[in-house]
Length: 211
Image (cartoon, rainbow, N blue to C red):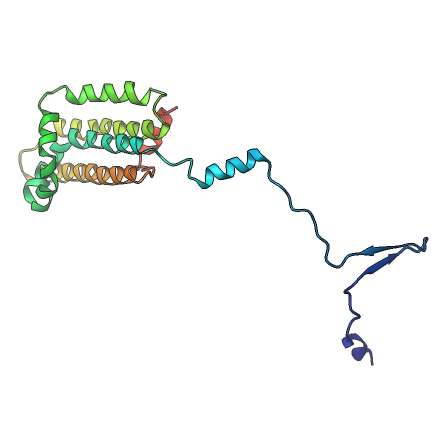
């Protein structure tokens, strides 16, 4: 009997409901389908949302191009580390061949690397007129070039002619060259698409230098 009472249908709640107070005989009608006023956005907030929907944070084409070109600097400066792998594997020769005129011009004067370093650092990185996107990518290319000092010092102090030592130097040079090549392809392509390339080890150092 109790179970049948629990399963019996509840009375309909549609229509007007009344709340009766024990101390008062008055009742308050409650609407079953209340309509609340829709919140309105302020003009300033609406303008911000429109700007975001239009992609206001997108990178300009000129900033993309400048940032992408900067990654050629460490690659040209460290092209000598590919002397073993380029001469042994023809696909690398085909890949690098279009860049030979630019590499030859870069290597034509011994102080070109230093002059480009000074120019990029003081004219671009320390110049607030450039966007942070350009200054970060430029600084990342500079840090990558500075890191080439370590394999250069190691090769100068340890310069074997043959045997196991020569194999170690060949492996080291080839590894440095491949890292430079991958960094060039990754950094160049990411900048063309307006993305932020973050190279391992290099990106954190570049972040600390860019204000």
